[in-house]
Length: 298
Image (spheres, rainbow, N blue to C red):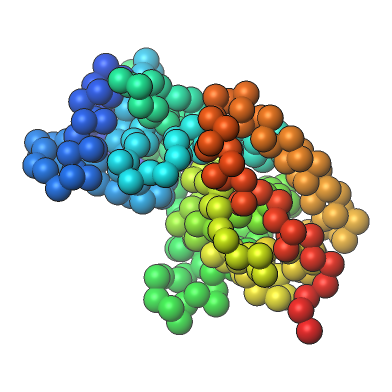
């Protein structure tokens, strides 16, 4: 019988009461100061869940969370913005990671629930997790970038997933959402499949962060979207929708739902406690005019 766990896996974790210590350590690292080796090792950027910001695994009750910490160079409250964006994704019908905010000395820490661990009496057991980098057989090399591709990843999901039809549609939904909010850090490390007791399936979405840009001409994602490359426009999103198992009409319905849901993003962000200043800062990321292009440039 297929079993999803690595039974030998155990983790050294921090507790929620140590958050203030971790925030101080992250700030010290940011300033180039020395911190205790154990903390430094677990605050290094990057985890199995992707991302480049300092983070650590936090235990709260019988659940593990990835804690993401603020940086002094941040131009806005990225923790609160990412939390609100994950909430928006769920409203768009996306299976997004659970998250919450913890306030530590007036600073926000984003807590993202780990979907690759499960608590037992003997400790935390690990689900198998494979990133799209492995699925697509690519790396960071520039020559491999042409295989950083949503349609190709959909092809791989048909081989990997126990429910390929559902997962391909879910991937399409995420691609459209990323285009609509300009989450252009959607590289293959930020997509993964998880091994459950029933088989492999698309893992919950994570690292969804809008990126404001100044370009009015075009928006690109990190991965190929359709026939016209990485261009984040509705025309391009729909151009290869059948690779995701969707008719043109069904794909357009997905786009329309996401666009309609995101129309109220400013109110949603303010309800999430994001300041008017930060809303104005992030606004250029949302539903840019180039997203609504009906046809490619000649």
